[in-house]
Length: 381
Image (tube, rainbow, N blue to C red; front, side, top):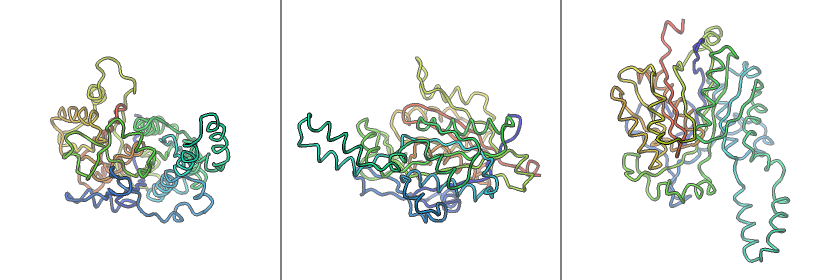
């Protein structure tokens, strides 16, 4: 990279709360406890969405109403990042890169239609299904299910009107968004970028999608170390970062939370012996890691991927402490990688770690690695 890139703002919302303070407190406390809802979606525990004063970041009620929960969460977190960076005045020229899933279904409508169709013969059910789908969804709700509407709402609500890109592809989408945002700034194609994603865990449609493969933890929550057979606990997460060239940040007197040393991610398609462990090892080759670096693991808890990541971590013989952040936040799909970058940046700024390696391991593919460095006095001045 020709131009150093800093993280200058963090917008983080999880079951622990919103903003820097609750998350930094959890990093400082070795006995920090997660917030878990084991009842609402039993037998699957989740890390729930906290109560948010949406008016603080999304002042117009009309904007709030036309968004699905994941979009409100993402738009809220994006606003927190802008405020934390003191970058509201920069939004007009800021690049926007969003990692998004496929939107959210209207589960109540799905259930109502299924009940109505259950007793009908196929010849009657088909036309009625088309009618209900056409009449049951308002246009605004239908639009809210489109992936690129999160970026659209961030642009509308916060005035982020530089270039806009939306990436789909679960965890890999987030890693690509961060990697490309960093590369664009480093190459001189912009000075600031807002990058991140959001995921709402309280969704039966997603839990039922993950459940048949045996990927979800059932019953009482236990930390990752206590899940010998694996098991994912999803977490509601909104995570956005303001990235900024060091030169631009210095010029406006902004402090850097962490410097991005490297961001790498692999192709999703497997070929031959290209396991997740092998992919991560290839990505790690030549990374500027120093003895004692901390690891912020993106392990989801899904059994196969968890075994692969543990095998990769065993090769890091000079690593310091390993933090499995899913124990505190749960796994937030597209939001997990930027959330882990946010936690690592907070730990670096607070002097809790000397250097950070952030890993991203998808449910079954999509490995990524990032190295964060402290912003030293010389770089700041």
